[in-house]
Image 1 (cartoon, rainbow, N blue to C red):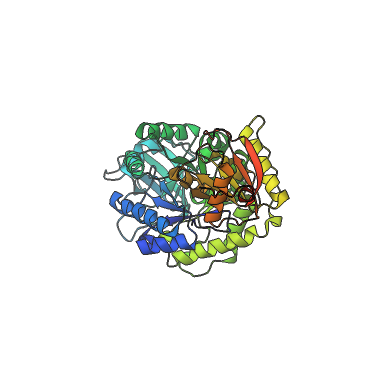
Image 2 (image 1 turned 45 degrees about the vertical axis):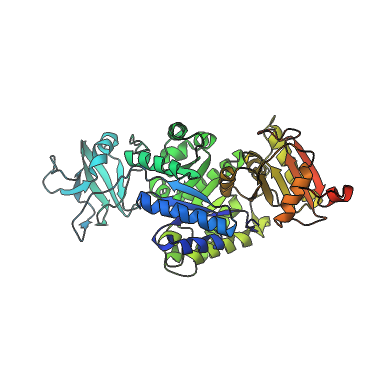
Length: 494
């Protein structure tokens, strides 16, 4: 019997030191994890290989569909090594940013040398212009470029503070020419494809071209490429969000770097716009970063964090994500349980969400069918909407219209089913094979009854492609009463 949850919004959990054991992963799944995020900024391939095996074993034991998302590191724009205990920069101080491992050649009298990673120094210097802001450690230390003598950059400190080795750099307002995919990312991609991960999250996306490039690489690597999830965190991506959403398979609202790039005050409206745009096109969207941050070290969240999760759900996000809370926190399982409770309570109070009406695209048969199914199910009091689908497109399309009733995807492809773990409101059942048959509704009945997703005399709404059941042929919607088949015929469905 498949795992069944009253929740419609899904939970993404980042795995790490606090959640790497097989036992802990099984606990997270029982607590509500729908997608496991593997952060390739940390850990070896052997470490991640072990996580993949543990996730799949635990998911099978729990009877639950759990997807795996590989999050690529992307270009690391960071400081180099700084001797302990670090360096304190004061407002007005002048600093020379230079490639790590080389003595600064243009150091001026009174300037402090500060190393940045050698592999990015020349590229960053080529993009920076005088007057550009350069921030460190999530914006805690702020500087402004005075002059550039590539590969060295001369800056003045505007907000001082302490810096230690490998702290991150952000250059808000400066378009960077550094490619999204590094050599490390390409090797990690090959590994992810070998492990058959379900999605690839691309960091520091700038435009739709970055997504298309990754998709081209994946098509060369495998005949069944995973989903591509665009992480929206740079200002260029925010400016081009519509074109990115059109070509990507999913969006991750990466609020941490985004806040540093565009300013924290702009993050809430950008988050709402991204969710709205994704909802309108039926693209799964993940809201991430610091959702229950205090639960890294505390067993309960703050009231503001609970409201943050609830508001993302009210806005229409498909998934909410935990990062440090489950990767390195002291209460990983409790964080997932807490997030699940917040989602369930929020969804019980849908009247407070922003009303929205998404209509089917003109000329689209599948959208018209699934839109109608969502409305019919509500009107007749159906207990579920069953979609017979090969690729999952029908179920994903139905979710776009946010029906009140549960969506049950009946599929014969487990890998495609795992992709629906990112999609609002969808749960799935695997059957041996979807074939054209006169006993179509008997097969639906048997599937729902055996998996305890409905009972005799319940009404369900069924969508499928008849008479052929070929891919992409959804053209039928029917209100079906369970038990009606057996009333007409004594023969039991097989």
